[in-house]
Amino acid sequence: MSDNVRPESMKRINTAELAEAFINEQVDAVRKQVGDKKVLLALSGGVDSSVVAALLIRAIGKQLTCVHVNHGLLRKGEPEQVIKVFRDQMDANLVYVDAVDRFLDKLAGVSDPEEKRKIIGKEFIDVFAEEAKKLDGIEFLAQGTIYPDILESDGVKAHHNVGGLPEDLDFELVEPVKLLYKDEVRVVGKTLGLPDNMVYRQPFPGPGLGVRCVGAITRDRLESLREADAIVREEIGKLEQTPWQYFAVIPDMQSTGIKDGKRYMGWAVVIRAINTVDAVTAESVVLPWETLRTIRDRVIAEVPGVNRVLWDMSDKPVSTIEWE
Image (cartoon, one colour):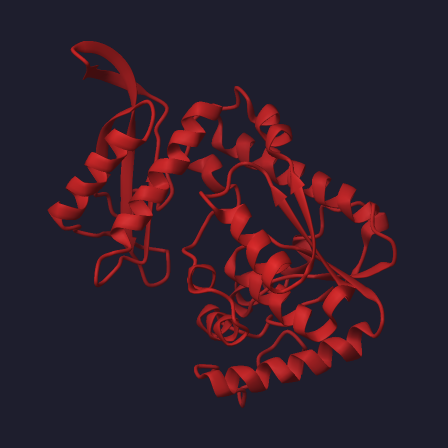
């Protein structure tokens, strides 16, 4: 049987006891595969890479080097959380790369969504490769490949993620959660001691806020989006039953507002909240008016340059979940 096929006899990991057994099994497997060699991991702060990092820290400690690239398109507080959890609490060997200016300079004036995606993807690979070349003795690359990735791409994704790296960075892969579904990865993450807001992190596109800051990204509009998104997630997160995904978008347009008796041009913030089973279709969620009103008042009062708050009530199809 292929190593990329989940055995039919494999139990669903839905309890801490089963998760601990899986962790112990993978710790032994990683130690056997890696020996005394060094492993490199691109740590985004997402669920999959964070769980892999925590698992490998337990298995091989300082033999693992995590590289966290801050491209300026992460949500509020995410880079700080990665540093706090992995460097401060787990004593990980963490390399933090502040590449904000590098990414945003490359993206200046670029409005086409696909072109933005290509720039962000290429720049990430370039930054990661540069950091990898600074490290001696790396022979393995860890990845957060999970089982749906294999099912959807027939095993291609695991290698595609490193396909853009230079040939001299052709590492052997370490993929300890590749036979798990997302819900199982979360149980493993909880058992490893990761915080809830990391384990239950909402889906986040690879280009990050770059595809929620619609059109050409400007630094001031990006910062307003980051602040507005934090408010949207905080307030909707207070609901007894939260939607599957909720976030903010800032379109590339301005409208007239009034402040201190004077007219001015400001941005609109769009609230997006949806429920879905498979992400192929999605339904807009009916949010309580009190929640919408609180978001409206806070965003307009707290976020610079914003004078309107809109609610996206579109379903998928025909609308997509993301705006770009």
